[in-house]
Image (cartoon, rainbow over all chains, first blue to last red; front, side, top):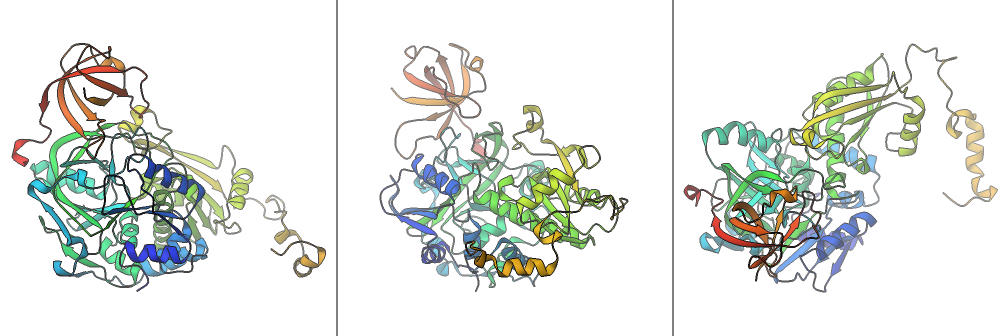
Length: 480
Length: 84
């Protein structure tokens, strides 16, 4: 197995690599834990593993579980020093392999059933939901988790939709209508006035969270198996027929109520702002809570880069677009979405073998299911390293004609979370998108019209480059 | 005296001495801090008019400097009885 069965194995591995800090002093769930995680994200520091939580003996926190590429590499069982392209290559390899079906285990083999609260015992306030940021609308138990429901096509869906505690029995979630959960609820359950069963898994196995976060067409249980290199073990819920990862830390079961809405938000969001309006959103009525002994509640703290929402969403959105463009025969060299763009900018490398290929790429990207999640596509040619921001930025600033090469897409599907949208546009999810075409026009004379790049790698004969590189230390420069 | 908090987009939503339907959250310390109740209540911009204190935040979480007071007239059900 290439992944970790649960967060306990994962924390041990993080510690082994120096990527976790074990905090033994008591930490307050009311802002202190959130502040620790926020600072960790901003410093790209090791993940905080908090062993004592005020008011909540028997629970622990794991903050920023996957907020760095190092931790993503560790979660995949790779060398923590792996480069982003190497991690991407491994992710693509695994997610284009044969699906690995989950296995269903007996509840006696499922650690998530070690403690079971039913009926009057159910009380969300028995869980250490943190107040993540000062000014948030409430305590968010769901920041790095999986919400398991029926999918848009009647299949299974694992998604990540933030969940705020409203009271002891009710959570409220931000679920967009174009999401898989949103489609299933609005198209099937609510029109029939039927409650929709759900299970919110807090502290799922790390790669199950990655799968829940990924915009992949592969069913998430199979996708998790492909990422882990082994079937994920699932177990049936106590109050419905949904299957949840057996080695999850906490499982909250219940139903999403039709035609009932309560206020949700505001919340510090992945864009680095508190943007979306406080609004009445979907209500999750809780019927059961199960959890492991010494359960680990995972916390992601959205804000300025880099948190796992930005990193993993960027990573998986980019690679899913990579698959889409290759499936359409576009001669791309790769796709990369920098986490620092808060998954708003897609950088696509392409061999420009015909005119307006950048427009074709943008049309496919913006027109796909992935499209609402980003609004900028930057297309560079195959001489640019898409993972090297200096090169991309240089190309953007020098090759993109301000009139001819910037194409604006009006009337796009947006989300309430885009900071640049007006309040009206946020409310109705009216977006806008833009293409920056940084390829040279094919109808320019390559000898006399296309400028010559002045770089070490391009304007010196190969033998001179090799000589300089071979003598670099002898000249007196430090070893690179 | 209990302490509550409400989110509004504009202070004009807190009409003085009228019965209003509000979602308010408790600021009492302990594990129920920040949980909500849906209530019918009267509010005042004076902190002493009604028995409980009411803090106010705006739509993006910014705290309002002014402290209000609140009297809860009745608690309202958020969840229809058929689902309980």
